[in-house]
Image 1 (cartoon, helix red, strand yellow):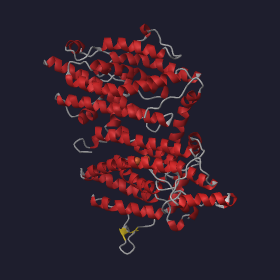
Image 2: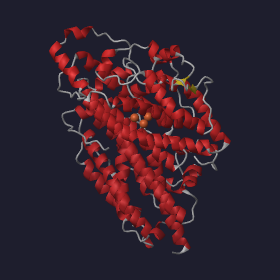
Image 3: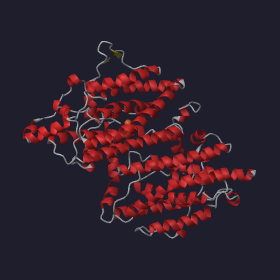
Image 4: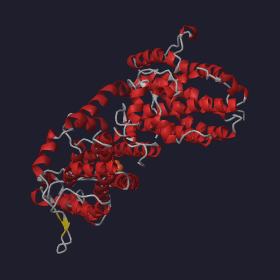
Length: 254
Length: 328
Ligand SMILES: [Fe+2]
Ligand SMILES: [Fe+2]
Ligand SMILES: [Fe+2]
């Protein structure tokens, strides 16, 4: 692997790992606050999967010469994170969390499906395992979107409002990496553009089964920047909270 | 978290006079033989009432108990702790779910129980009305509060009501992981830096009184109801469970080099039981009746969660929505 390729691969791994960590963290904030106990439990399950997945990816990065997972996750500043802005937004009401979960995990399931064919074998192997876990996340999202997207005027209106709010951020998932071409040429990943195309048709196929409306894609302006470390004001406070104990003494074992 | 049986006030047994004496005798004979009572079986109204109350309190303790530890999920230091604490608190919410289902078999719905929780009508374990200021407090809860809960729950698992016993068997199996996790966290604090050791010592100093309160008022001042013992609703006295806890955990705390803020605490070699300074039962009463540092905050969190989730529950009840398969 050339040096350029190694850099591009790290870029790919970091952005995926950061997405998983940050959304996992947000999902875990539902513990104790869900609209019903079953949803506390579901969001906690997904949080554990996502944080476990990010851990595995940070370990892969560690093998590639990066610092240990705890250091990477707990010691970086917001502008060193490469997650999309969508995942760092506060949970808001359940409608927003659900819509975000649906939009993000639909993309994530497709992404890991593509990654099972990555030329970087350790990633392809890990993707096979993660793909299985994500199947439950999309099953959960789709079931709830179809239920609440057809139930009461209030549930439909809430989901619609959150969908309209989340879509520009969701398009930010597909912000290309600075080294996108190298990533694609090396066969690490098929690229954000083809992922986005598949994602759109998957999202449409689920939303068609609800009373929710998708705006014309052309009118949705993506909110970009996350992949190059430009974040909303919400990420740094999340990281400060996450590292509050760790930073009491980063050399200590906890 | 928690167990049951520590917030019994005096109960009126007058209603027993109205029960069919033959059925009552049969019921008591079954329990004496060690049989379990099942939801469709005949049972005295008082038995039903007390069990609902106990299981409901236990369920509430699980979800309220998820709050002080839950706030540390987002701050847990390192991947391993974060993953383990998420799983642990998720278990606690799962325990609430199991217990509400067990209580529902006696005729009170989950919605009614949660309503009584957030309106302050029913109680939950007093210990969760204290704040978890530091990571070490969260570790104290995971290790020692769960340890206390296990003592209670193992006793209650031998009780007479089938659905509650079965729920407790499952819960106890999970609790033993919580205990291991909590103990592991504490060992790292105990063998870590001076700062880490101090953090845990301070947690012990803060939590010792609530921990002693956890098992309920001293036998000599608590309403003793023989009929609940006979019916295997209450399985051990408060002093017995407290003593069992001290016997199992005080030596472990001392071994790690920590002190316990009670100069009178020692095992009495004559009685084989622990001597200790009598806990402040006036404080206990004040806290359980709403005067603790966190009562209002805990209930407010629950109330807000219920209010914010109302539209979701209503949507699920809508005829256009069929049952949503929960992901567990
Ligand atoms: Fe527990
Ligand atoms: Fe529990
Ligand atoms: Fe617990």
